[in-house]
Amino acid sequence: MGHDHQHTSAHTPISRLWWAFGLTTIFLMIEVIGGLITQSLALLSDAAHMFTDSMALGIALLAIHLAKRPADAKRSFGYHRFEILAAMFNALLLFAVAMYILYEAWQRIGQPQEIATTGMLIIAMAGLLINWISMRLLSAGQSESLNIKGAYLEVWADFLGSIAVIVGALLIKLTGWLWIDPLLAVAIGLWVLPRTWLLLKQSLNILLEGVPEGFDLAEIEAKLRTVPNVVGVHDLHVWALTSGKLNMTAHLVYQGETVDAILAQAQALLAQEYDLHHVTLQCESPENRCDSPQL
Image (cartoon, rainbow, N blue to C red; front, side, top):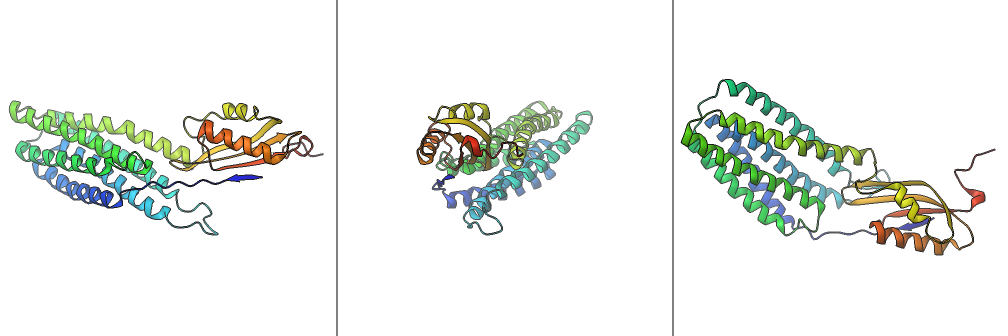
């Protein structure tokens, strides 16, 4: 049986991540209070998305902290899966918030409420600035860590949401069309829901140990059969422990060649073709296949 363990670590800018988390969380509270005071549903909708930013940054920080804890006898894979559990909770919570915002918007379209557009505009502009600062803080690490990249994309999306709220506040101020506010809230909610579904779908796939996106088991099996003296492949599994941490196991049926040579060639192929490094391969002779019928 062959094992190839390769662990990589990105130089994550933890201090920058803390700054982005602090700024986002503080502004989240300001935006919620401002949305309630100005009666702007668009601001509250944007605050809901800002909440997911804060959650994403908090999850990134906690995941980095927990990932440093060593594996033990009870948790042989360590604590990496926590990131996925937190992401699923985040997705479910955001889905509930988005549905509530859509319901409130539907109620308000028929009976628009007066909105303090000046306050709405000031808060939205402040949010734009906060998101821009957070994006600058995270830009250095997002290319090195999938964890940081996810948080960066959340902030980038909210940056665009802040622009939408600013445009809405200006239009309401100039035209007096109060229905723009709930309509904008609906637009933000509908824009968030597909991303929420995608996050939930990816989290479920990892928790169910599904095949990661971009991998085809039939193709991998065919590639392994090209290794000299490999005459069969079975019990092939590819799954992700968490985002960016892939694992693979397979049984190779061989004849004629030494086991060490087959393992070396198969591991090199998997690393080169699929960037799979955490691999466990078991070699079996045709007479001793573990999937052979037992008499």
